[in-house]
Amino acid sequence: MAKAFVLINAETGSEKDVVGMVRALKNVKETYFVFGVYDVVAVVEAPTIDELRSTIHNAMRQVEGIRSTCTMIVIH
Image (cartoon, rainbow, N blue to C red; front, side, top):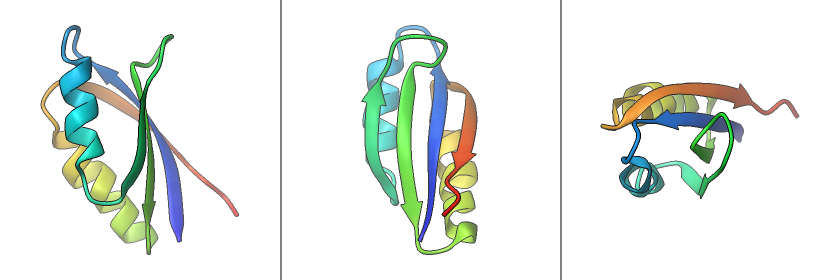
């Protein structure tokens, strides 16, 4: 199982919508509003690293209101 923490910067005022849309994506297990440099933290788990990459790059990064992401892949 591949796992990553994704830190998300959202457009001002779109944070609630971003959390809802990210939470609905396949392979997203947890989503949190946070204070600080980033607005949202998502935990993504997938059976393979390729599916993890696809979820983050092809689905999550296409969500309207996301300005940027920082992905931290978990090492076991």
